[in-house]
Length: 491
Image 1 (cartoon, rainbow, N blue to C red):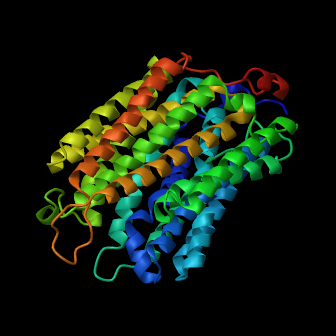
Image 2 (image 1 turned 90 degrees about the vertical axis):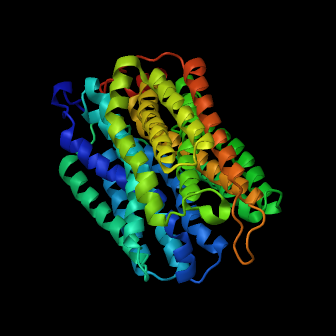
Image 3 (image 1 turned 60 degrees about the horizontal axis):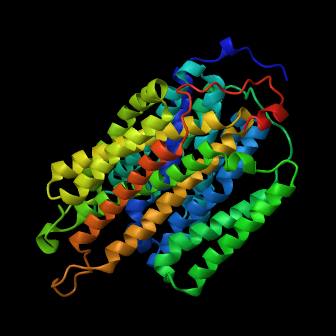
């Protein structure tokens, strides 16, 4: 393949907008059902455990498809892969929108889970199409759109299901329409891939990695429901360890592995994934902690603000999402000026301050909102820095799979946060409640949750400053004209 001259790269603009819309689809798939789980339980006449699979199915689907589709895009072209993922997302949204059956809704959510692969695919396209000097800012904008999309999804869900007769079907129609808009934008603005690694798909590696991730996330996400000492939970974790060993053995033996283990253990990539796990924990802790806190009835619990789901989304969570979007260009600028490593450390430091404020100053609405904005800035800076660290550490033909693994590390962190915080909030209740009221978490449980989230970001600071080696502020992508063998040797 004759490489395209560098001066024909697109400057960004419409391309970034198209990919940003696609990234918002990822955010919607991840968060759109969380505010309506209670509504789904009533409408579908199921149990809390049954409706929990509406979120778990998407998580497990993402674990399987994100690395596989990221690698497929590296090998056979990012644009057709991205288009295919968006089509699957539309199909999943339509199925979820028209069904009133829990099994079919879960199938729709499995299809929607594939949308998580959009994010690493978008970053791979950005690396190919945007000039090197604009690369940090472009990646940061895509990442910021992802963070903003989570807040927008929550607000949209709240608005679409308000009133005395809420209709959950509208939530999925909304995500389907947004997916169609994103698909049209991608068809118009995203060019054909410049770099295709070729080769066969490592199906055995994909299967073993998928089983490892499914067992791991199944144990994490269902442990609270099953019991942490139950046979199913312990069996899931033991199975995950076994499958991790099998996966490593498989990847060492195949000629063209799904994940090049040399890339996987390459210091910048490995530690960035560790940081991704901690950032994912903090991001979900911000959402679930603030959302639950502000909905607590102050008159009964002695704390909280008695907010509705809609008010919690619009008044308390949306400002953090908006500031994430606004902070994304600044994060990209910092990556270009002082490097991704320093940007990651600065963002995490800001987040530590935000969670400390939430832990010890959540008695006033303004404090919760402002502290949430600080944590939003932290998440945005983290999302801006981590793709830059990944891109600096891998050649072109591994960009999709490397960013896919980083996305999964954040998902694992979010799952751990959900399990930890859910268990903490259920571990101690307010005493002396009137008969007939459900248990309400003791205020100290929220304080402890925010302290733990802040500690995760302290670890991110340590990883950034002590673990990650210095990388250039503007990493030159590996030239597309280089042979694949040479690119692999450079890792």
